[in-house]
Image 1 (tube, rainbow, N blue to C red):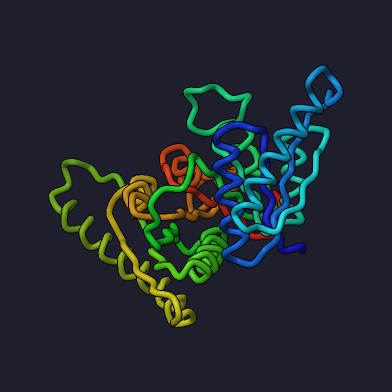
Image 2 (tube, rainbow, N blue to C red; image 1 turned 135 degrees about the vertical axis):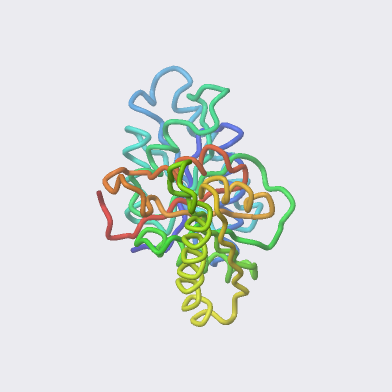
Length: 277
């Protein structure tokens, strides 16, 4: 697979923020950056091709000014399909949270949601321009295959940035009868067992990556809430596309879906490269 970062642009403010993040990521990790603009099926309509060219040139100039090695291409076709196709030959695909075709009140547009749910590899969704750096990458980890892929990507990002990796596990409390006198002690025992198991899952990663400071937190709350809280001091939040939830066939699990809609820093959604469902 070609080790390159692909960023999709359409001239919108979120897409230019995506270019900024992608260019920085490419420079930090020593990867080339490919900028694509999908012009749609009617590029020769009045103003169509000229706008596409202008949007692509502006993005390329911005990325080169940020120190990235850049190539560009204008594509003609279906935006979602073309970007998913790009993902098969990319290290990652980076997109703005909303494009020009979205509704202004929406946090995440249909293109970002669809590509995150079907891309062959990591998809990074960027909501706005870079803010103050925290030197901290946050990853949600529950031991599932998809969360292991997320952990590997998060480790690479933390290593390249010289950042701390913070591993978050949120345990959702099971339902107990309110009339059970021992419910409190049962819940506490169950939570302590979950904490022990979660810490044991993190231990091998810490041993195998002594060059990275790895911290962990196990909390008794919904994983989305736990990751939102952790994201307040993070430069990037990484999640698997699906976890251990009940809907294994879903393209995006409830946690990745919730994080994409509520976390304001860049979010990477990762699936194992061999998983093509």
